[in-house]
Image 1 (tube, rainbow, N blue to C red):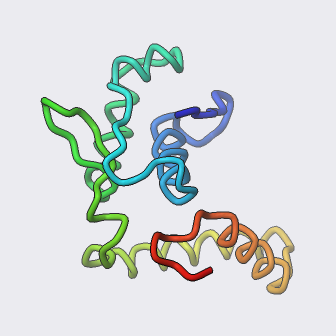
Image 2: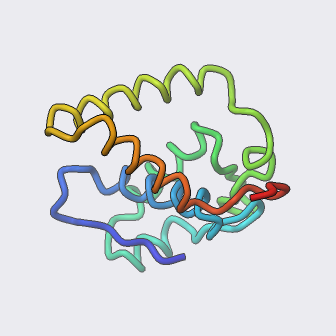
Length: 133
């Protein structure tokens, strides 16, 4: 798994790690059951404190993307990739989406351009298993 972080970004490093892993799941680069590097190993690989990686993994666990246990470490949850969203996800996601769309509009993007860009991003993700596209 190749993660690219921007150490000069205003986005905290743990959030960038979380975001890149979620994107890798959506892209199909991380599949159900895929093991993630240990927090210590990823910390070494990225030259950051392993506690930062631990914070990202904990956030991913809380959000239902991964499961963590002492024997197998962090693993992409199988059920998360095929089942319905967890309770409350849609409302929380829509709230974040509203903020993201507001940023685009406040920066001067037209609704048509926002829709086009959103469509392009959605099309870039790997088709779910069983999809006929």
